[in-house]
Amino acid sequence: MFNIGDKISYPVHGAGIIEAIEEKEILGKSRKYYIMRIPLNNMKVMIPLDNVEDIGVRPVIGLKEVEEVIAVLSADVTKMSQNWNRRYRANMDRIKSGDIYEVAEVVRNLTLRDREKALSTGERKILNNARQILLSEIILATDVTEEEAVDLIEKKIK
Image (cartoon, rainbow, N blue to C red; front, side):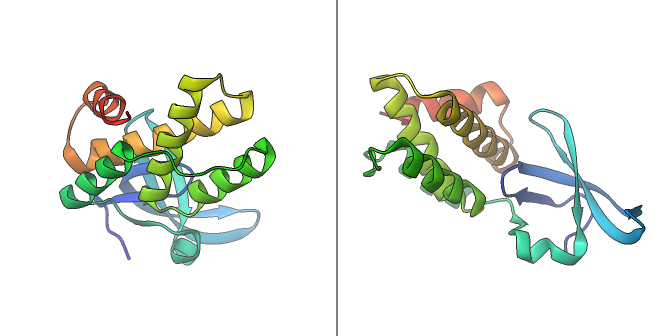
C-alpha cells in the first residue's frame, strides 16, 4: 500500500505523487481511491486501491534505474514489424506493461523512425504518450525540470 506523498507510476498515464486517499461513491459503489497528481501536465488521476496491483501501479524508479533507462535510450533501435498495425499493437502493449524500460524502448524506436520518415498519426500519438510517461518518471526520479528531462532524452537518442 502507498501513502500520501509517495511517488508512483501508473501505466498509460505516467508518474505522479499521491496527494490524498479518499472514499468516493461511483456508480453506486463506494471505494477508496488514491488521488494522484501528475506534475508534468498537472492532471489528477483517481486510482482504485482495490486493484492497484492488477493495473501495475509501482513506485517511481530510483537514480540507478534512470541510468539504465538512459542506456536503453542510447542503444540501437530494436527490430520492429514493417506492418504498422502490428507495430502499433506491440508498442501499445509495451506502454500498457508499465515497464519503464519498455516505454523507453518505444520512445527510442519511434523517435528514430520519425527521423527517417514521418510517423502516422496513430504512431505519433503513441510516441507522445510514451514520451510523457517517460518524462514524468524521469522528472520525479531525478528532480529535474521538464526542459532538462526533454533535453536529456533528446541527447541520448542517437
